Length: 100
Image (cartoon, rainbow, N blue to C red):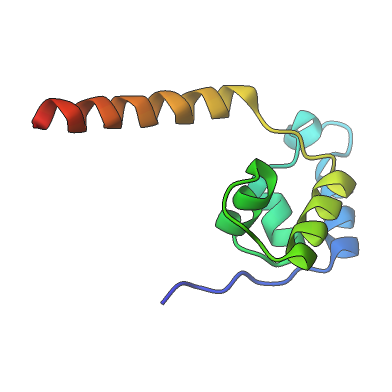
């Protein structure tokens, strides 16, 4: 059974984010990740990914909540991570084809 995502109050999340991004902090230049968005809105990373990538239908209220939280947090997809994921998927697909 999958663990249910713990709900985090968005205001508390913003306070922690501001504290982490204080001058001299390691996280000063870190942008929010898909995991941060999932934690802030209380949905799983998979659900947030589905909403942000527009794959598989998701309930309209869920999609609206996730998109609003992503916008509030300033989430932007990481092009390097997307490229790496695509490359990994291509390699797995090629290996499967080579096996037979």
